[in-house]
Length: 132
Image (cartoon, rainbow, N blue to C red):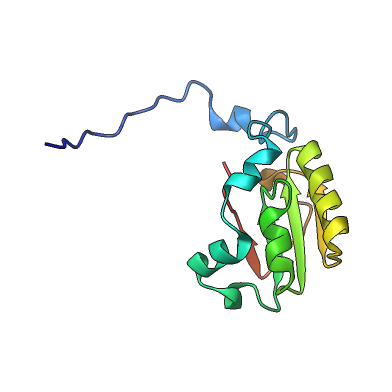
């Protein structure tokens, strides 16, 4: 017989105010870019989130975009897509992938969600796909 257990409780040893700083540090650098190959295709994932109408004709921000897998997938429908990730190597891969695919309405930058370089109301939709 299957027995349900109570969730494990975690005690944070570091105050969040100390973790969230202006520096990106090692945040987001723990999942290899190749992990993108293990994720669903962008159109399949978008369908699960509500379909193309979610991004069609909109300004989209992809937080934790990694190598651009999802950002590039929705770019065909969106007006613009900005992808931000703390991993500079992943952003370099995303830019390379965009060039190879000929996608011109996507921009990628190194950064973190805690310190977005955009004013309020810049985007219509913010997506976080497989973001830790």
